[in-house]
Image 1 (cartoon, rainbow, N blue to C red):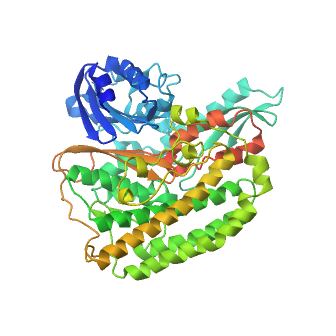
Image 2: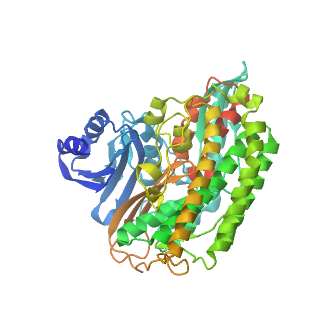
Image 3: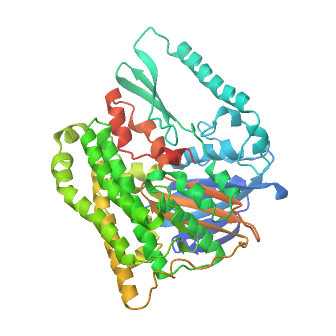
Length: 549
């Protein structure tokens, strides 16, 4: 970390300081130095951009840009800040995308929602938001949501008009004289799952792919500003229903850091159990869905059958199977009045998995069709992972040892035995197998955490009826925090800003991995045939709820 601080101190900084064991926090005085700083950091191993998070301060006429830059290999990260003018004609800064290509979509998102123009970006355009928000920058503090929503018909017409214009443009440029065309590929779920891939084909061969997201853009980050610190859980857990527990842990940690609160050991182990239950539920959908994309629906049904048992455990604790609201700032929401009964419910789910596992291994993991279709297809190298900031199972399938639970332990993970779970080839086949391996790891972590809780109760060190929550302040102090967790799909990062005596977040940036993974479809799919799209897309384990947050 000292080397990174030396690099930063070569520039005009307001401050350079240690933030966490794996983070340096710094603020740059001159925005014109941003590309020089990022180039210098890249030379010492900071090669990935996790996200870009603007914070709007209209009373001070400034926009503070937060860059979260990471060295995946050496676990050294930089939180870099810089102020720019918030006036739209001056709200600009040089793009770092030509230096760190993983910043691409994150700069586009900041431009679309806050109006920050990134000079030199290779393709600066509106992203995520629909046409009715173009040029209005809805995350700025002075955007009038109520006024915007009064014009529902005009807004819908604007969105439709954009599609008609695109159709007419394709008619002109593609035509009908040869075998080239543009296809619109889903999947689409009416509640939280739409994405459109614009697939440019020549017959069956794919020449180009352009991902298009934002169909059910919910503005969860803005919604969190309308709720108090407990109510924000409702928005946060809906980032993606498949793993709803880990986003709540991520958010709660940020609130606790600003409040200066430490949760109990019991609550920490409970977060491990709930987090791994959520991960397992999500991984079962991902693994089953991966085969479902190839038409092997039996395997999908098996995975959903096992998933029901893990959902039973979540329901037994929280009263809900999906939107559980079971974690909040201060610990976990509910006491364990009968911990033995709940652990028994969890063990039923584990037994169901163990009973089904041999069939999964024999019939599906060794499936010759899987080997033929997925092996050596869609390979990501170690360098691909770092340069494009691929995360979680996608990174580990390429042999990259990255896992927030190990790299920056939180909850009680630092007290448990675990190691990186990896594969080596980085192909679509490995991106299936890694999910299977991680389910086994999650079950092992759950077992360890249950033993720790039982030991704590027997020794009189834990009271499951009282230790679930510590008291949090009703009003928060002014502060800022960054929290990370290992979500089912990789690193989830939240940047929380509060004001003095606040009852709700001033700014909550939610960053999850499906954005970068969707961006990779531009590189992953071209050169393949149309029949390969479901396979390759399914291998990325993308959650559309994360995309349209």
